[in-house]
Structures are given as C-alpha cells and as structure tokens.
Image (cartoon, rainbow over all chains, first blue to last red; front, side, top):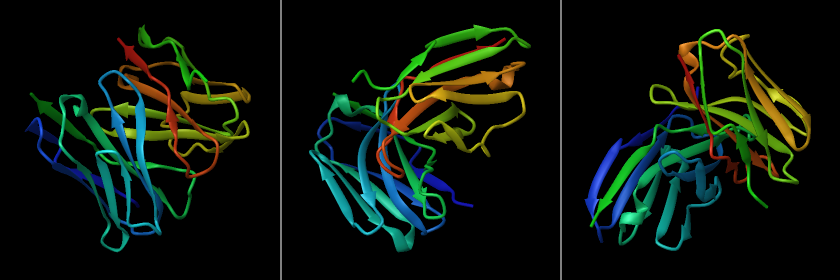
Length: 113
Length: 113
C-alpha cells in the first residue's frame, strides 16, 4: 500500500530564507507527483506536477525535484515571503491507478517578517 | 470559469440527520473526486466519477455514505444518518484528464453535534 509522508510537519522561518520541504513515498511505481498549497479554510491549489520521467519542475520561486527510485521529492522555495505561509501537500498518482491521488500529511509553513 | 463550486460552505447538524453536500465541477472536466480531510487522517479520497459513472468508491467509509452524479455539472455526497465522527472538511475536485492537475473547490466544513 502506497504511503506518503512529509517532513517536517511544521516549519517556521524568517522572511528571505531559502527552504526545502520533503516528501517521501513507499512505492516507487508512480505515474506522477504533485505539490499543492492549502491556505486556511480554503481548498487546495496545484503548484507543480512532475511526471515520473522528469527530474524536476520549476515555477517562479518554486522548484520541485523527484527521485523516483529512492521514493523522494523535495519542494524548494527560494527567498521565502510571508505570503508563502500555508500548508504544503504532496500527492502521488500510483501507476496501478493513475486516476487517483494519494496525499501526504502536509507541512505547515509559517514565514514571519 | 468560476472554478469548482461547493455548497454549503458550512453545515452544522445533529447526529442522525441527513446531510447532503453539493458540487459543480469545472465545465468540460470529465473526472470528479470527493475527498474528506481530518486532522487525524489527512486528505482521503472517498469516491470518484468519470463521465458521471462511479469508478472507485473503495474510500467510502460506510453504507451511510452515498454519492451520485446525475449529470456532468452536478454531484452530491449524502450522509444518512450522520454521526459526530463524520465531522470533517469535504472537498470536491475535478480534472479534464486522468492524472492531470486537479482543481479543488473551497470545501464544505461539516460539524455533526
């Protein structure tokens, strides 16, 4: 059974820092991996989607990498801002059913001025 | 497009009552997903539809839960009878293609007293 874990569960950093959020999954047979952002009381917003054949994806200050063989992904946020404060979730689409997403437990990020 | 629309945004009900949650997916999206989010279990897939047909309902916790999609623009998730442990945030999401980026609604926060 695919399990997705995110470390750390919570992170508090000063504005301007570069930071890394980690995601690990137990079964390397994935179709793709997505990173989402969730603001309090709101739904999820997709940030980046990495296909299993790709190593990384970039969008603005965000960079996500994927090492499928080791079951790991990282989300790198450059020059963090208070507006980046949110919960970040990763989710994998397993190869046995590419329609589905299995979500991690999330990392709650706070960036203070 | 207005995005995925869910109603109501908040629902407070008493144990034993019937609860109906509603979702309107993004026009043209053939896949619709219902998720439940709790502190204890995170984000879990309950059921998903393709072209209005339920494909996988293995995440539906009990027979008290049922979901329908009578047409391409409307879906309901019903709980009857409701119990306090059903208290959670219920999200609806849609996508145009399998394993593509999913678009989430704002969620319905359900409280069962």
